[in-house]
Amino acid sequence: MAVCDTQYEEAVKLINEMQCNHMLPPGKKYEGLGLTLMRQFLRRVSVTQDDLRSMRIVHVAGTKGKGSTCAFVESLLRHHGIHTGFFSSPHLVEVRERVRLNGKPISRQMFTNYFWEVYELLDKSKDLYDVKFPSYFYFLTTLALYIFKHEKVSAAVVEVGIGGTYDCTNVIDHPVVCGVTSLGIDHTNLLGNTVGSIAWHKAGIFKAGVPAFTVQQPEDGLDVLMQVAQQQSTPLQVVPDWDNYVSKSASTLRLGLSGDYQKLNASLAIQLVHCWISHVSSKSLPHSTEMLNSLNQTYVNGLAQCHWNGRAQILKYNYITFYLDGAHTMRSIECASKWFSKQAAEEEKDLKKPCIKLLAFNITKKRDAYGMLSILHENKFDQSIFVPNITTLLQSSFNDQTNLTVPVENRLVQVFANRDSWKKVCANEGHMITNAQAPVFPCIADAVLWVSKDRDFKLSETSKELSMEDSWPAFPYQTEHLQILVTGSLHLVGGFLRILKPNLND
Image (cartoon, rainbow, N blue to C red):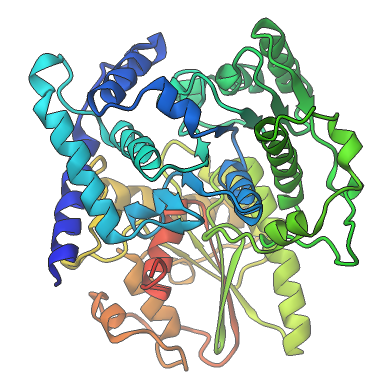
């Protein structure tokens, strides 16, 4: 392993240890203490509000579509010639994916260099503060903003972690523009169990005088967004439907991200970028509906050339097509299910033969497995597999995907619970399934090897070596083309990508 790679792995191991740093007592984050600490961390690494203001930030919250919307925003800004930074979460394969410059994850060398700069600054000042070091997400947020400052980005796109009001990214006091994507029920233990309470948290990123945009929302959610906007003196607009947009050129408007639901995210991104450009160029901002017929070729290219791994992503191989979508809420699972149904049908039409449909699924215990699997069952899968968000159980260099907060045993117990939920769904639909029809695998490498063995499928030798088991029962569909939907968790999708595209970020 090269020196840079060794130093990178050491940095990743230190970051992973921060997962176990219980920086705040339960509930204290939601009393505002987390933001106080975040400001201290930034002060300790010499990132000021003036620095944040100079980044000209686009700040985006929401339940569904945050990452995709931010990806569209970044792509549009970059196609306008802007030097961009982009902070997102979670990562799929490597932690450096969370910090992007001009659309690409920063290099291992850059990540390593900046990591040690920030770490040493925090270490140098630790004796002056009650909280010595940040926890995982707080550190990565501090690191990202530090990098954006020193790389002198002209626009930073920042995705909220959880919620908004008390999220550590909400130290941004002067963004250029804010956005709220589709609202839904998620993280109820932190944000409440109604759309209204969740909307209140998301609207916490609104700032006085800073324009904000949102998509069509459930009535109770939109009402709360409007109320908070009025209280904060925030001009808030609902963006137009996608069908209202046309192109100035002869080019047909096309999105680089698959799925009809991306049209809503794209509309929000267009308005955020239009507002950003108007602010930076000091031009008066027309109402959003006035630009419906003014999407020039730069907008067309930015939308069409946007790429965002793990969201409605299709990887085609001989005899196997993987459909990857990190959907993990009820609403996003509905969208992923419809997307898969449509895309799988189109592929069958192109192949001129029926295919075998397989579901690879995992969610954490805090989510409604039965409800999500009931939605997915409509696709009439021929086979299903259940696997934890663990790439391999063997010793490997996949430190970026290490989860120290939940023991492996607990994650495996949850996988069996998910499989039990699937069996109940199938029974309620009138057919019983056996364990053989819904096997549980201890890691993703085993699952991939099981479905791909004896097929013309080019798994790398390294990936094959990650599997612990070479004696699984024969896969029942040896000759048919497979269509495999991987969903329920972005971390699950990330593990599959680690196997299928090990050089994803190179």
